Length: 136
Image (cartoon, rainbow, N blue to C red; front, side, top):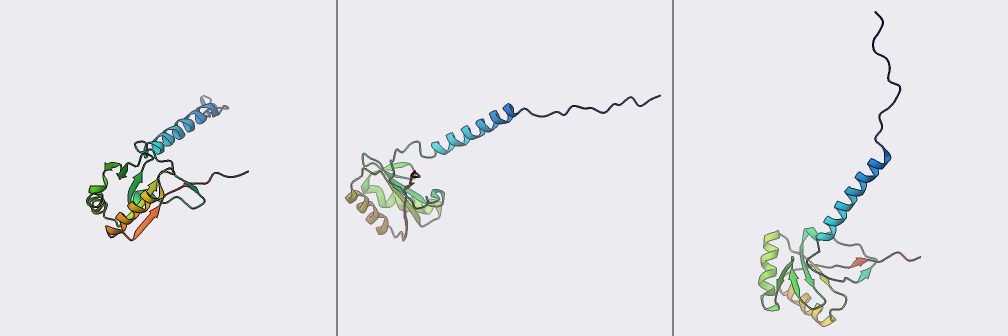
């Protein structure tokens, strides 16, 4: 009785198209989830060559083009700013604030909000900007 098993001469390989489609789906999901992190607040940030900070470690204060003020995606008015900021700081257990203001917001409004943040006792304030596009 001879050996009934023969060696298989063909190799099973996942096609390149399958791998490309899977990578495409992964990048699409990652891109969509990254864009949803700021989906509710439309802020056209100024561009700079400085690095973008990690916004997850602190409280984010946003000023939109129409001068609406948000603290961690919650719309507030200037009268309740200090109380809302102190609550957000204690909820996150941090003393770090990131301010992102639309490029069309008047400088005076930005300074007013910076002043309110400083009045709340925050010493660690970061200004958020988009990275500059590469020049050719």
